[in-house]
Length: 330
Image 1 (cartoon, rainbow, N blue to C red):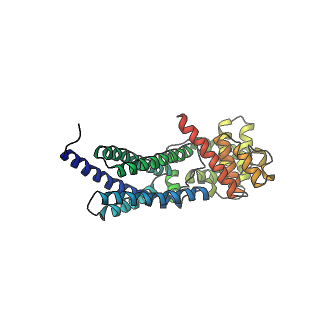
Image 2 (cartoon, helix red, strand yellow):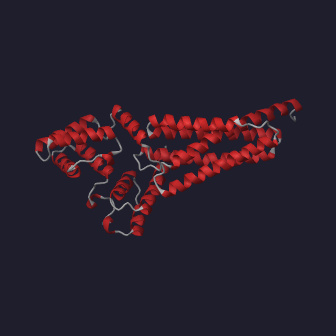
Image 3 (spheres, one colour):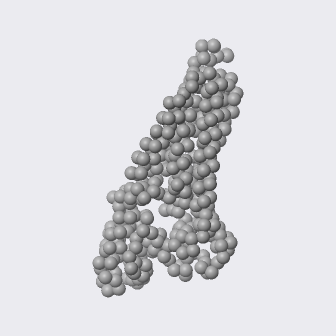
């Protein structure tokens, strides 16, 4: 049975309400996209984020036009609310680890997607074909963004490198969360054991080792900021001693630290003769890698040595593929 005039009017009113909500959320999405551009790890990711922001602006314009066609009253408040919400979100998330910020972005995209699906059904019910076509486009766009964010979060879960780099405040927040949770990478017991080994063998002063452990714990995953004379040599020597003494757990933690710092020797890299490779050869070799650990080691080493943008970008793209596969399997 066809909807009555009253039911149709009610559905159109609901449709306008949902379009307003979509506009507000899209304005928030635009501002968040601009914040994320500054956090892009590579030029390719930066270009993608800029394009996503431009596309969001176009979506907001189309939503506004559809409301105007539905004779909705002009709304100057909703866009402002979206901008304020984005400001609040970007400010508050500075006190959160990067993974929490990304999960917030994902929640926003899921809400946009769910409302777009709802708008599509409402448009079908009221016979507004232009709104239905708009909703179809919104569903396609937000589905793609949800998938992209899922991949980025998977990259973070695998230990990086992540398409989006944390801000300095997010690094501190992540470090606090990381230390409180006592993660396996730098559990206090392991660091103390490594300090004990280094001190016992006399290969490094206890004070230097303790300073290294303290800085590593405080800075968390941002270990590139750890700086002290003899740091790399001390870490390498401590790892050798740990392996010699059969403390594989400690050796593994120390090796992971050296990997994150990008200070593995060329012989320890998963790609043979990497240092002698040209940029095209290095990119081709990296694209053949298939594990998160190998790719993470290569990115850290490249950034710490030649830092060729094309190589880093290729490694990041390959890592995203590995992370996406991991997310899909789960």
